[in-house]
Length: 405
Image: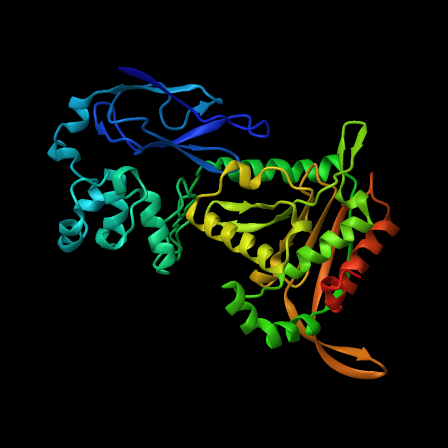
């Protein structure tokens, strides 16, 4: 029976996608749930999987072509014969798998899908150590990736990651290399240009003494980890502080829609995360309902998803306020750009010991510069400064957060 393979349903914020990779060729046998193609959008990479055992009979959208939501990608023929047919030697395994060590190749069961065999071979994984979540306990590609992540092994490259650009720097050579922008990088460029051209953006700065939080982490970090199974980080404190400040200054949590101001009665905090494909901003939804441990777990889960290329559209859509932490890369001070239609973004930076005047004495304290960029069309300078000072006060006295004062 012939089946139309269609592109996934894209949300309103995603206009179209690009066919990044076809993992199967026309006429090549395919098993149920095996990845047929990767669709790259301006936000994430989506996998298109086989609906049943069968074979691709034609491809309507080759690699590099633009595809719309629910547009036909290929025609798929379901057939018990083709599903059960023996795999031709030329496609018995990807070239990468053939080139892998004989031991791993021998250890890979024959019933593994080609895409799974490839990941198993590339990463020297013993399939017997991987728990399968597919039909009948079959091992999927995601199972192997999860096993690698749990074992702290070398991460598998995210699908459709930007190619590594190696350019010779030999003396006397003047080499240039031209590569197309990925959709994610192109969209980031578009949105940043939009933020600078279509908003009245200003930035206000302050600094915060991180010693109270660092002492709290030192005194309670071990107990926190034993209780919740995760480490107590800095970001959860800033998310909690931002939520409290947003409650006091609702315009900072609002957005502009044409001639209207939309005030949000919830706090969905975007946390900027760096991935192999570029910057993504997964959203911690309803952060006002979460405690520190729940926020930390959400952020850790998003970080893993970003590294493994598993972020879904629902993970990065929306958000009422964003926090970016350039400090993890060593940034001492920067001006974060707005993430439209949001009207403000908080930038965290590197913690650095600096001499500070405290009660007439010079004291060395771990200080962090904070930056709040905001849309002056909606937020006045006094409101922006007061918002940032509120975050500073809450972070410097975390008891105010814990006691809801």
